[in-house]
Length: 106
Image (cartoon, rainbow, N blue to C red; front, side, top):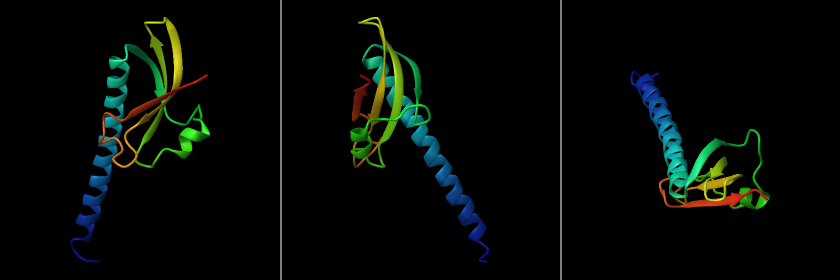
């Protein structure tokens, strides 16, 4: 094995870890900014563990985008609402912070 092979592996693992960390922070930032700008209080958020998005949303979401299940308190209607947020654009993913689409549960 080449003497720099271990260093290359460590650098690749570090870059992967930093990329995952950045993605998680970016999604969290976008989620909270969306809730604040719409006057919602974020009660709960998560991914696929307890809920499943609609088939239409699943089929039209790219691997660059992130789907997040949210439960919010809407202070204007005094209701708790839930549904799926699609964060990021089809091609740029969460690099496009303005691309947020909401699909409320019925």
